[in-house]
Amino acid sequence: MFDLVIRGGQVVSPHGVGDWDVAIAGGKIAALSAPGTFADKSAKRVIDARGKIVMPGGVDPHVHCLWPTPGPEGQGASFSEPPEVVSRAALHGGTTTIIDFAVWNRGETLEQTIARRNQDWFGKTYCDFAYHVMLQGKVPPETLGQLAEVIQEGYPSVKIFTTNVTPSRRGRMIDHGDIWEILKVTAKHGGIGAIHAEDEEIVMHMYEVLIREGRVGFENLAEVHNTLSEDLSFRRIIRLAENIEGAALYMMHVSAATGVEAIAASRAKDFPVYGETLHQYLLFSHHDYHRPHGQMYHTYPSLKERSDQDALWRGQLNGTINTIATDELCCNLSVKTRGKRIDDCTGGNSGCEPRLAIMYTEMVSKRGYGLPKFVDMVSSNAAKIMGLYPRKGAIAAGSDADITVLDPKQKRTVSSAHLHETDYTPWEGREVTAWPAMTILRGKVVVEDGQFLGDPRDGQYLKRRIPEEIRSRPAI
Image (tube, rainbow, N blue to C red):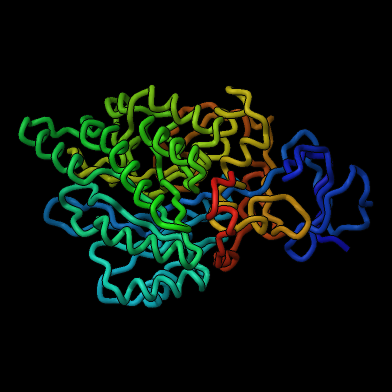
């Protein structure tokens, strides 16, 4: 007997969209078949999905839980919300898998780094999760040896900063010599570089210029974290990787047309580089910094011009931009808007919960994208690039039964009062044309018509292996 049968919905599968029934047993998808194949008595529960879209649960490849946020002058940093809060909000919004960061600190082994991060997550997480291993600063040779081991153990994506981001955050940036050595390790052992690419010299120069000129308000951030910086850094890091046999790159939070162009040029040479953007880059520009509480729209790199947004949308269609993430950093409005200057603003955004609804509205309802393209951008492609597919990101026999039932009749206005993240949302007042009616995690109904049924012990860590086809050429 099946545990669940989902009947009557428009199912988005790797083979296209069809009116199939989905049978679930033991936490896995057991079968897809023609409507009416399975009798009511063949399942413990039959879910009527008529008029709804049945899609794989969302995969957000870029979130930050318990992440330090700048404190008031003279005080230490506070921390963003923990996995328990973010994972619950993710499930409410139809996302069933999130990928955070295990940040290495100098003086510890990578095994210790992962064990420390496990304390934040294990037994405290409602949805499934994984980590990018984040290196920073000067990386000693012994850490490179450990990196080879953790890649093989199932932690294959390595986060690298090419900038310190702000003058007060010294120690994040890794110089290009060490990046060269890191990418040699990822190339040899089956990993991928996950890159925050901005040009350190340009960024820090512009901080100096604007501070000298007295233009220190956060509304000037686009002049600091500018398109030239993205152009120079993307091209430099990509060129470096192109000279390492077996290297592959995942360019995080692409924000500018120059970044899109750099990725496209490399992919045209058949180099395996993939582009991630964020829903705030697609829908907000630096002009939004001038709105009330304009800091709420900001993340690093900064918002750019509307022409950059156009390039990001084109990049989705031509394959240059492969995923839409959030750079989730869940904190309350007072923390998000505490910084007033170009050099003290909090990055990240509260946006994990409304991501699927917003992107369905913008991609399918407004721009006419097909459902497969929408699902690729919010779920399947991230699963493929990050070594989770077809366990995640697919409605197919043998895949985890992570399913979102999206209801296009649930049109609503986004409001923080009805979300489950924090006390604000940058999407306040935005009309969306669909909302998840049900979220299923490995066969368990965890959200149904707004009622939360999850348990903080539900979340499982996902060890990963990135397929050779992803690492050898631009496969998606």
